[in-house]
Image (tube, rainbow, N blue to C red; front, side, top):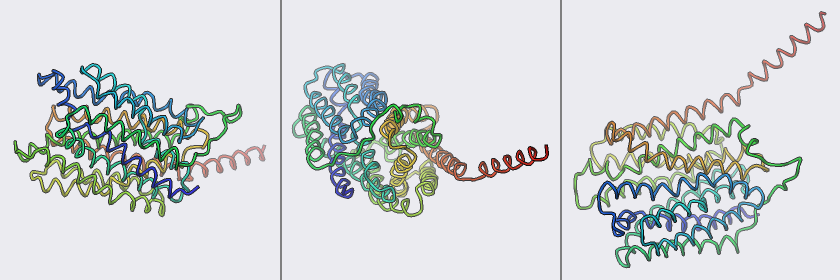
Length: 412
């Protein structure tokens, strides 16, 4: 199997899916306002619910789709996700009430996970000594889509209104099915037998995997929490300026651009010296670059720190995925990546909520302290877990105990 060809195909698909799904972000609250929710508190509540509904249902369904992947393969999982996400998103153009939009956003979460599944597919087909490079390159596709999508969505909504953008989004997702069906090769599936039956019990018996699931959850909280409050933080720096949306969007885009630059190189570095060595360092560095943003009082200084953080954050997710793949037995790989996806979606759900609570109790700037400390703690946790797993003291103690026991038996 030509894994480099698979990377190129999935890069294009991830770009289209990410761009499509983020097209609606600039105007989603305005769409709810157009439906009649004009009171500020109610509008904030409904916007939060509509955003969060997708993550909640996706977290619930991800392990189930992992079982599906173990049986039918991740290529079939990609097709399933593309059909469900594309059709339901297109149906949002027909909604006439906030409740209907909320229900559809919840339903689209049942079928979501295209991006995470594409990582899982590559992890199956790419040689392990190139997994960091491949996953780092793939990540740039979704990040590029996240940068371009809101710009296209904002422009289209200004020209044609909100509803046609949902149709364009659905079409973008459905179009990704063409390269997946006709160009992407089927990934190998381990036959499920009585002697080789997969279960979630096998997943949670692997302690290193549990540590990586926790790390995935904490990283998403740290990253999504900051992103959700970026506009308000930028406003605290520049005041009520006419180009506030542009300045806050630039703060997020700069991080994305830096991630696109750093991810492939850090992935290659991890392949060369070991992802288990690079991941703790990248997490700690990401946290250290986040902490100075607490005291940032100028927009250009914020841009510098966001760019530096983006350079190292770009290597975190590929390293996590590569390590999860390395720790996963082939027969339960789909279930493992299903739990990984749940961890990520739950982090997406928790991050904005935690950031809002911290900002309300202390200050907007304190969310950077939360993000930085979480990343540093996660790096220490991953590093400690790896050191314990690789330290041969347990084996040495077992050998000594066996020797002492043998001597006692010999004497008696």
